[in-house]
Image (cartoon, rainbow, N blue to C red; front, side):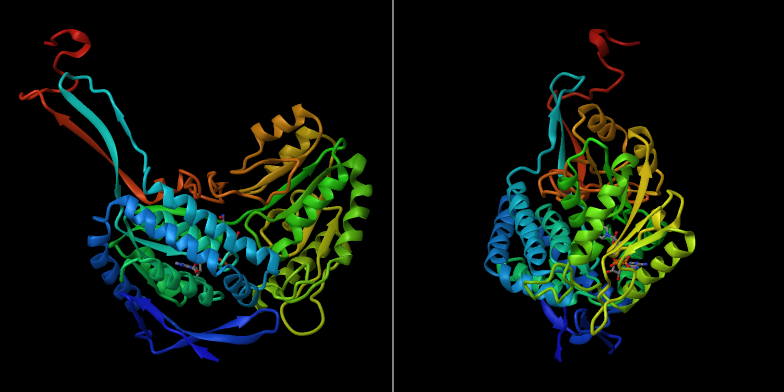
Length: 493
Ligand code: NAD
């Protein structure tokens, strides 16, 4: 088994803890690589390095920072197949989706490279003569980027690219399930020309290395994607710093009685079982009009039973493994909860026989909105069918969860579509499409317990990683007093 190191200040280093952990192939359960168990003092070393290197990086003109990211996007493109195979092996998603993960990173790096020549802010008027007013973007400082395993290349790049173009230096703490993918991303950034210390990689647990990034006052922004539980802890302990939180989901597909059921079927299969249900935008609820429920259930179960489970790297696999044994146990626990709550198991409901962490695509019917399987994030290939009598009830059920990330409605009725767009409490709503399919140039994020209002992607990505500084230039040669002098054309007393 290969042994890898962390990257701090441009040097490959072991952990001060002297300990290591192992990354596994979830399709076999066998070890892939060993990494240092970075602890609090390792995170502090990385913060030191980032602070020092950040002084120079913030002075590099933004278009030049953008050019480094453009080179990075080209390197990602050159290494797309290698990275996709790495994702399929370390994280387990099927190869077509693994290529999609890398493509998302390429798109993001390419899009954000252009921000080097924008980083738009604004100029405006002044209430006083001979005075100029504007707001400019400045870097935040050292950013802590804490990422999950389910998009092991795309999510780090969604954070790294905007953080870097805005002139920040960073410490990346990836999930301990996918450190190999993170290391490869960071190596390519260096090859693209990011100076030593501007990007640092600390591997290790969230409760040691991750925690230090959250509580350390020299870290000026934390961008976190992960579970609601960890997000809540971070919100309570980060102190005064910029905070981006992208948390869990309990996304729904609504199917009305006038929907094209074949189209809806494709959308549900993709949203419920793609990435084995381990996407924050995965649909784990189908809210369906009672008139078409039975017909749709039959169609869904027929297809779900035929999905082929297999290693991500095997091109004939439809559904890959879950990330680890704990995830397999959690998903199965929810099957037992569903059964105990009185839901009807239509298919799946068990781990697949053999090696690795595979779980059979699982469909429950007869689910009511308050059941735990309809409320809690399962993060596996389990979908609950909830029957409703019309559009108003469907939206009420869709909104009856604590999360609000993605949502979708299948209908041919424009009024139903617009009611859903207007009333569903979610950061994303798709009409006649699955809950999955975000593009990098639009804002991405959720409401309620899914997030704290930050939006990744699009022009909003730079909001998370820059501060606005307001600048007034007074060229009148005298002291002018806002709100006091010459307001509304009259001298105030
Ligand atoms: P997780 O919360 O267990 O871990 C995420 C990262 O946070 C890991 O790197 C972990 O080591 C670190 N971490 C954990 N506790 C921490 C703490 N107290 N302080 C600092 N760091 C800490 O999540 P996961 O299992 O890796 O990912 C799955 C979750 O991520 C799901 O809930 C999923 O919905 C969510 N997710 C959300 C989005 C989104 O954009 N909303 C995208 C992908 C995944």
